[in-house]
Length: 208
Image 1 (tube, rainbow, N blue to C red):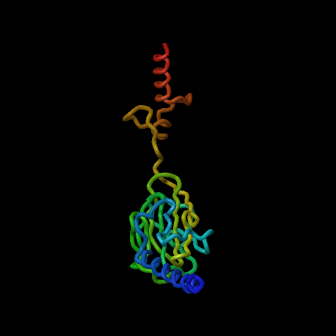
Image 2 (image 1 turned 90 degrees about the horizontal axis):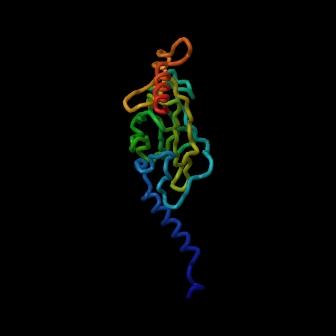
Image 3 (image 1 turned 180 degrees about the vertical axis):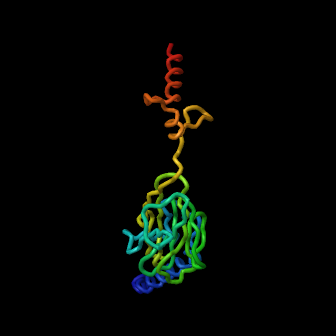
């Protein structure tokens, strides 16, 4: 009985069935918010894993004049493009700042931008407001070419320098913030700040 079973035809039928199932359980109307992570999570397309490398996909950040930049000003607005060969879907994540979709072909999913349909496209476009604090930011993307071929998972990224951001302050005592400007203003001619001298005096008192 087994000798007459059409194993080859059965395998072909199962492959076709699995492809149909994968297309159904995939997300043609956009990635779910559960994969809006750093790095972006794996598309939920069955057992397939990320394709190695980045393909020819890149993330480009553009200023108001349309030129590409790698240094951004804190709190300023930029255009972000994920581009390359034709693809069906994409997800864009930012480590800081705020993303927003550009046009009707993209939408928000959690704090990320994703596609609204699986129609072929050659770029994802979004606007991004750079973070107001910190010195760096990273944009990362997943790009889905088909249900079984997708790139990303941290491989497609743009690392940016943020200038003019608010510095993080350190407090020596609860409720008392010390900034570089305050310390510099309090410094005497000898280079010792009032805060430093006060701390030294307290230290001596505690020892003796």
